[in-house]
Length: 80
Image 1 (cartoon, rainbow, N blue to C red):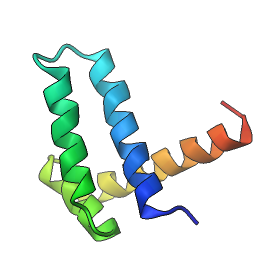
Image 2 (cartoon, rainbow, N blue to C red):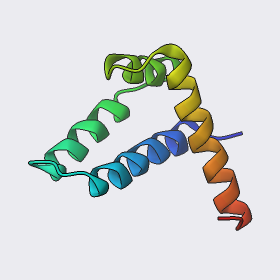
Image 3 (cartoon, helix red, strand yellow):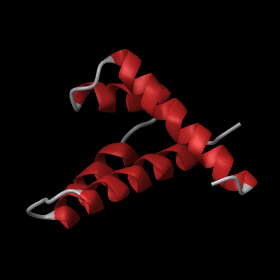
Image 4 (spheres, rainbow, N blue to C red):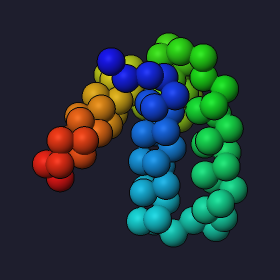
């Protein structure tokens, strides 16, 4: 089972990958803000709320988390 800390790291890393692909005025400020928000999450419900506050629906929030977990599992198995 994945620890909350590891899930938080996956989310922040995915945001870093995203921000590297788009133009943003201040990418460091964006990543610092996301990191602060994620670090304030105490459980999975808080992480779902984080995604909902950023404009994602509940279904999409779950999909994002599942995709991150699946990608992480494949990376650990050396399949990506």
